[in-house]
Length: 280
Length: 280
Image (cartoon, rainbow over all chains, first blue to last red; front, top):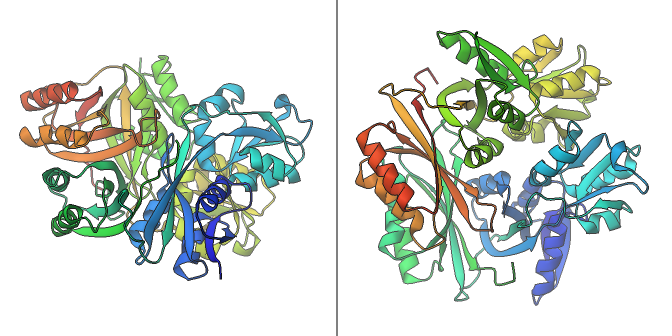
């Protein structure tokens, strides 16, 4: 039986683009299952409805995808087993024949809206912006709308929903990439070109984060990313998501993380997985 | 002439609640000016339309307010001169007589929607969520709507717009506070109980963030917060917002920050200001 993988649907989302790209690079068949929200994708994995889940974790303009980080920090038995990076080109799409001056409502997922902030403020000042669960949902709403709505979507979504592309590449910055992670219920084997993700919190004492980073320095481990999120217990208390080079089976990584675990008040290993080797 | 201060309007937003609270604690009169977006508030300060601006920078559940950080990192001659923290209690409000089962659309600012994620997923699964520029804007839309809409707002907004509170305190976590910063075009004097905010980026080399934090450790300076944001130049490159205890005029803080500036590829001093002394 083929493996199944959950993604944020409906068809035409950037998650759909990512899962198609990821699937075509794997030497195994995947059955795609679409879900309504990132949280639903991860719940489906937890409940065993799918074997794997692909969810966005970071965008080069908007930063972390908070819901993904928050679920990863909380849920047990979920591991990052791979990553996949795609370029994000955003387009202004509307019903055939719509003119820019007719547009009264702009719809998209909050991240694309943020990624086109300057373009929208310049070209559509004062036009209402509506948040939808996905870019494809926004495209669907434009189809159902009265011709005064536009959406910000992928080109594939415009094609799927029969909409006209009014303007291409409207993102504020050409460097627009989204990193997706593939999540499963058990770990994958070491490949030799791996990275490792962890999340931890420290005591709320002076220098406590520094002392954890000191451990990586001691073992000559390269930290490629640090992201803070509120601990949700009190303002000013944080949890830290850290990516490092190497695999948990590497002796140095293993020893350093053993020490990190000892020196932190909360620690969770999120997974070791092959670093993305494609072109960015 | 009274000083003027810009905030995210319309009346009834949490920014409105914050600016009223902040004003009542100051021994000077303030004229309030409302703006349509956080970006507009900060542009009004830059253009000299207002003397000060009050904007949210961090929430204890949702984390950083990205637009505030991104503008602070970019604009010259804007300094944080004070901070103010308020509790955020969120309420489900609708037209008088609306029943929960009638609700087809939920509207709010993206942060309150995120702060009630569990409540909304449990009680209103599949109900469309629309992002508005402010909680008050959402309340206004409910007033103009057909009785199938609800908003998530402050209690003061429900009162101002004549809406019924269907349920109080619907946020997922009782610990819901928002930290606001007051921004001006010049710095304020040292008070003796100050903190300092900076933003910097490091070379994309192993251990470069660690080497900067090492500086604070060397001078025994307590770092109270670190927040990373994408540098927007490439995926995997970040800028770091750091808060430390002390004032730029303290010799140790001055010397440490001189060294931080020397060891970073981008550095900006964001301000020294009195740490919030109120009750949280």
